[in-house]
Image (tube, rainbow, N blue to C red; front, side, top):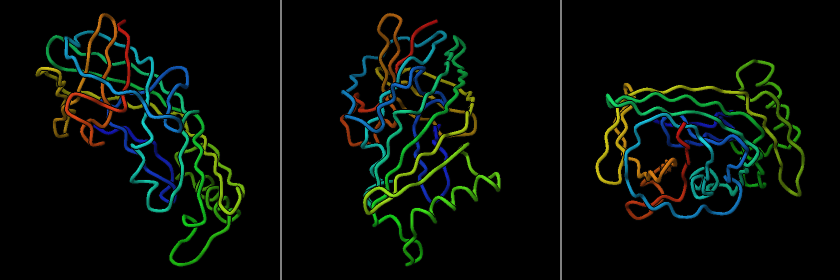
Length: 220
């Protein structure tokens, strides 16, 4: 179960783990800001209907996308809303909607394609061409010079995704298996009317039962 911020192939494809439903309703995602606090998994009973209230995306999630040329990504303007229902029959259903501006700053090391250096104007023209062809997953884009590099703002189109599958609990791990996909174990914690679930569990080098990125939901 992957949650993706889709843009064009020149830019980035950031994979965010979830049940096809993670985000917040107030633009509080911290993908371009400070690191998130650790999430200690405590387990519990996730049965019920939940509304996503907040996410925190640790910048380390984007390391593999930025380390090759030193680009920086700010998704603090992206807003996401959604719901998750964990049913008593061990099935679940999710829905989420995402939109808003994403900012990417490219240093000169990123502005080379097949040995040819491209300008910010050329990068902007590429964006406009993708929009004109109807193959972009953003509704608008602009790139301007930023020092020796380029700063691009992409406004993501409103994108709604749904998910469904089965779930089970083992200790502090929630095992979810989306239809047609492999099962994944997600550290989680239910405290009263709050459900917190790790994002990209086990992919950031954290200790078992913790997570640097997470989403928090409130019971309906």
